[in-house]
Every structure is written in C-alpha cells, then in structure tokens.
Image 1 (tube, rainbow, N blue to C red):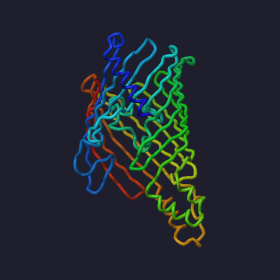
Image 2 (cartoon, rainbow, N blue to C red):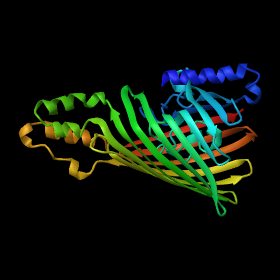
Image 3 (cartoon, one colour):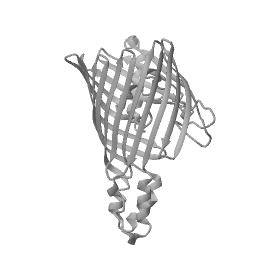
Image 4 (spheres, one colour):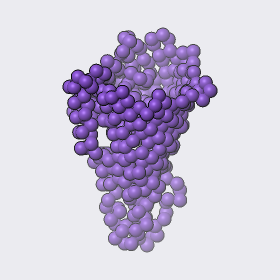
Length: 372
C-alpha cells in the first residue's frame, strides 16, 4: 500500500502544479496546542505526568484537496503530532469519485468510522471537549487501506447517510505487529433537525503478535495444550465492533451519548463494553459541559480454570494472564469551551479517573484548537 500512497501523493502534487487541473486545489489546516499536568506524582493519564507538557496531545495538520476532474477529487492529509516529536506523516491519502449527487466512492487510506466523531477525530475545533471521551475512543486501529461507499438521501424530514467500507489495516501498536484482514462494516447516521442518531457495525480477522504472551504460548504448545494456546494467541481471530450513538443540540442544550462493544473471539483480549454521556449548555460563545464515562473489560467466567492441575503452574498462569485484561474504569470530566475567534477555541478540562477501584488519577488540561 505504500507504493499506492506514494502514487496518490504524486497525483495530488502533480495536480497542484498543472494549471489545467489546479483550478480548484485547496489547502486547509488545523492545529491543537494542548498543555496538561497531573495533580499527583507517580500518576499518568492521557500521556501526562506531574510535570506540565505540551507533547501528548498537541498536533498540526495540512490537508490538500484537488479536483482532478469534475467528478474525481484527490485528498492528502499530513499530520505532525507532539507525541511523535512532530515528525510529519501522511494520515489520509485517497481518491474520491462522485457517482451522483447522492453517492460517492472513496479509495485509498481512509479513517475507520468507528465513532460519531471519527471523521474529524483530530480536529479538536469540531467538538467541545479537549479530547473525545477516552473510555470509548480508545482503539488504536484508526485508519484502513481500502474503499468506502457513501450514500446520502432523505427519508421524509430525516437526512440519512449510509456508509459501507471494506479493506485492511496493518500497523505496529506498542511494538506489536497488528493486522485487520477482511475488514468490512456499515455506518448509518440519521439526522432530524436537532437530533442525530447513528449505528455502526464492523468485523475483521484480527492478528496481533503480543510479545509479552509469546513465552506462555510456547509453554502451552510444548506440552500439547494447543487449543489453550490458540485461545491466548491472536491469529486470524474474528473480531467485531458495535456502536450506538445519539446527539442533541436543542435550544443551547447539548447531549452526546455513545455506547460500544468490542470483542475478539478465542483470544487474550477481553470483551470491552464502554459508554459515555456528555451534557452541556451553550452561552453564546461559551460552552460548559460535564461528561461521565464507564469502561468494563472482562473475560467470561467460563474462560477460567480450564487447565488441569496436572500441568503445574500453567493453569494459574493462564488464569492470571486473562485476569490481567480486566479493566473497570470510571471517569468524570468537567470542561469549558470559549470561541474567542470564528476559527479558534480556548478549552479547559478537569478529569478524574478511577481504574479497578484502586488507581485514581486527576488531570488538568488547557488548549487552543483552530482551523485555517
């Protein structure tokens, strides 16, 4: 796919230098400058510590869009993130073909539309939080190489947008090679005046080479426990993602709600169920909001105690590894947004998190989001 991306980039750059094609070339951008700090030492949240830092969530991006013909558009987005020492990378590179006024086909590197705000996940100006709720917006698989078909229509007074996707994903996450093969899914959004609702479902064959579990898998296979090893290993195991969302913007009252379920069959991954509810009120250019979040990752009880005591410590070790995937997290956040410019917003966030009823962390963040 790298060669495909390079070719697409050359098309975009070539279009900008050819007067016949460059008539409608646009360069836009967005940026977030965010500073954060933890209230206590030896705690960490969103990449912050007890020393103030700008790196974890600050970013800068440029997006080039060029109309190659009346119906074909090329788009490339270059992203520079503080957490990556501001090295520039191509986040999106794709071609769009407008089939009709109501349908469009995209091909290239695209965003996986897991969430309500997936398409503008990095554009902080597009939402009121400093960051989207982390218990829901936590998957490291953010983009894919493939195709997307979008069909827009009206059903009575309701605007409907149906999106179908297919493709694959390859990356290295926390040092572990990761793949999503045969990725397919649907994302359907309905909007009626002040109310927006969406449902999304995606499925893929998931493979992750989790280095930390490799010795355990080797030990299990060495004594003939191949099935138990397979239930730990993540190799072409089917994974699915289901999301429901609801947004309200009525008489300055704001509501955002999303709930997701993520599972990978017969693997070390525990089923994840997460949700958030965000309430806000808009006072002209000032918006105040409060958000509560919950995440619950846990294996079914039937996964434990499957290995005979005749195999010594292997049984307890497997149970311990599975239990280590258990996460119960509750987060409460208070935030504010002030639009001090038509293209810029100042934001504040205070977040208190409790994980597994033991670890408690509090963070304070302030940032400026802008588009240009």
